[in-house]
Length: 84
Image: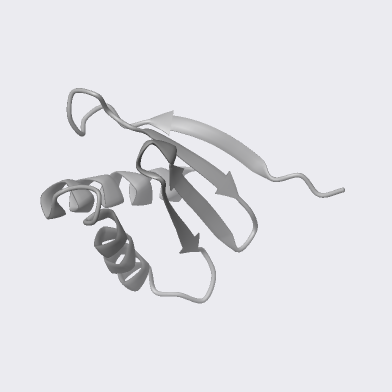
């Protein structure tokens, strides 16, 4: 049986409450979830330009938060994915 890696990270710098961000990693994608907002995003790791995926993530995050905060959170997520 193939198990996936699941972890939780807190990005405190985005407001006083921060937000719990869950990551489910596989070889080809990372599923990013913020349960507090009933939000998730599938970040493709293979065959997609990172700039395009970042724009899509910002667009998806701009629904539950401001555009500036969505851009900042996307950059934090992207940085985390690069170094994970």
